Image 1 (cartoon, rainbow, N blue to C red):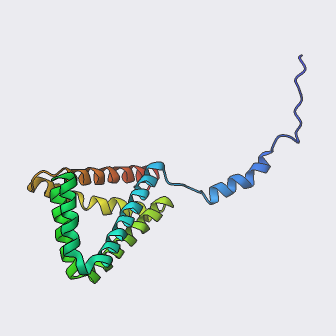
Image 2 (image 1 turned 120 degrees about the vertical axis):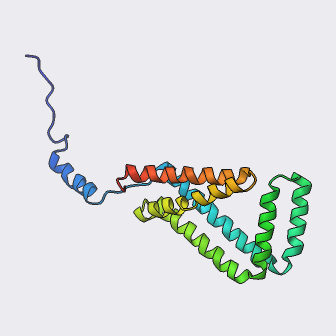
Image 3 (image 1 turned 90 degrees about the vertical axis):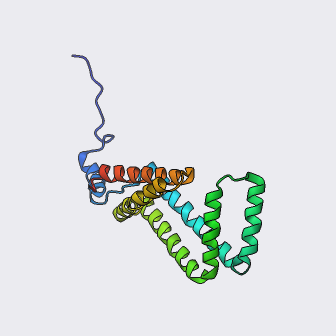
Length: 182
């Protein structure tokens, strides 16, 4: 018989050596969220930051909002023509309403931003409640957005919002299935 090299038993880990490590992994599984869920979390953070920027603008210009809005609208039209004109008009109407009740709108904006940041944290940390919050939070608006897309004149912006919300629901739902949550 050929001489096979003998292995030094001291160099090979025994199954006893691996047992505590395996037990620790089984007792406290450190699951991480997928890249697609992290992308949704980042999207949530961006929405929250955008809301806070809107709150800062409202706080800063609520007294002189009419002048600021007319200046910004004229500047937009001069630079971009009527690109996104319906969205700009809608934002102007909302801002005008907000300037009348600016303290209430600030409270609502901060509540909205807090929800976005909370959901982003939960998704990033792979929390079960955040998956449910995301799929229900986005899913509930899909029929409403579809309705407005069908009954009002066609709008690429509304279509983009609808498509992005559907994609987010699909991503979160698929991750929920993968994790065995549904």
